[in-house]
Image (cartoon, rainbow, N blue to C red):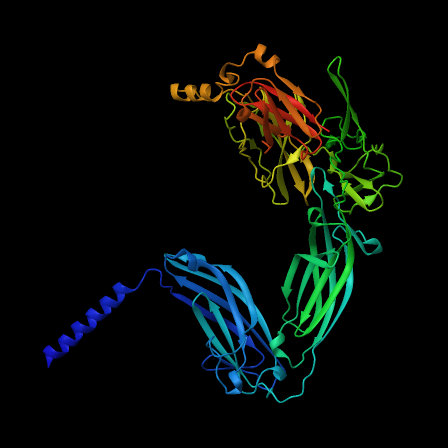
Length: 621
């Protein structure tokens, strides 16, 4: 008897070991749990919840999803819950997907499980669900929670629906209560005006809106259970309509107020006469609202609406006038004298019909300055607090561009905002050391690093924010090699309070030189010579050869011609910020190359021949 029992033990142990060894590492070990459940109904055993006499059953809980293992795909997915009615009213629990029951989505929530310890991952979020007694069958319904292949089923009982009730439609009442710009400005004539550009960036407009809703449930539960709304931009194109979604949400109550703040609309998404559209869905009821006409992205956009930089002054001092910088990043037309090979740059605003200057302080919103409608503006007053200015440039009455914001900053000696130091990099592909700044001992302030590149000797382009550079120190990485000798980039740090500048640091300059950072090996030297054997030997380009190159017309319009013995593969074009551009080049003859410039924006560009020190400034009309 003992031997028999021992034999059974060995067989069971062997079966357990085989089963364990055969279990794949990719098999998930996922659990779904409902924790901290609260309800105005009654919680019963076996994952069952009863209406217990209430008409509106409110169920609130923490939904926790956990995984133990090492398979990365199980750590990220969608937490999903669906409502199932009984199959043919036979009291089936509807926890299987193949029983002919159509699910009604209650939750769809992308999640990423967080690492807890060892190989254990978990994610928890709070959720609130509402159920109507009159729309839940008396035979019971089910909620199935899923994550990956794992599911958890709860049953809802105590409803009064039998399937024999007469049809009743759902009703949805929607009322707009407010619509304004996020800075508090009113929206006039039901038109949201989106600027084409803000400085040199694609323009955006931010709006706030709210609406009241009140819905009454019908008997068509299969059409959906919760109200939901989608905010869209609607394009009308003849007989067709296309939509760009901006915001979407499901509401877990039957009445209330929805408030949305800082909803951003991008000018690049817009076409003439677009509409802001609200689509409100509730069971079979659908409300389609066109609330406002959106303007922006005209066929003649206003570019380079730039005003002079921030100023730091003493308390009670008068600042300098705000002007438009005289530099080749402004819209311009070119007049050239072909005899002396000189060009004069004439700045104009051919797409601008009017200006309006605005101002604000730390505690106020933007307001128009009465009478300030010229290209330049001078406050001509003593300043006792930090004050901010910007310029609106209009094309007609509706399309416009917003300039960069310039600040008049009162000197605050209590803030130490210093950065260090100038750097000179030896090679064209060298990278700078981190730029260190003094620390600010308060959580109220934030940092913003800026850069500015030179376009001609010691003349620099406007300052631009560096995306994501908001730490005390900054480590810059040049993505392109230096393309001119002595290329310079300035850096500085802005200290902000409530997103507005209150202090500007000193600036440091990083200088780079277009010198090769290697010595060609014999094989590489042979390759370079082979590339240029039928053209110019670019590894030894001298001043006489450079002078034999002819590049015309300059300024260019649609085609730029390069006349001379040069390898087409080595011709590169960069914008004024040093970014290499994709260009179409064609070898028209042995010594003639044409570059298509028709799609380039008006501005200043740099033509570079690789493996040489040759560079030339190109103007584009």
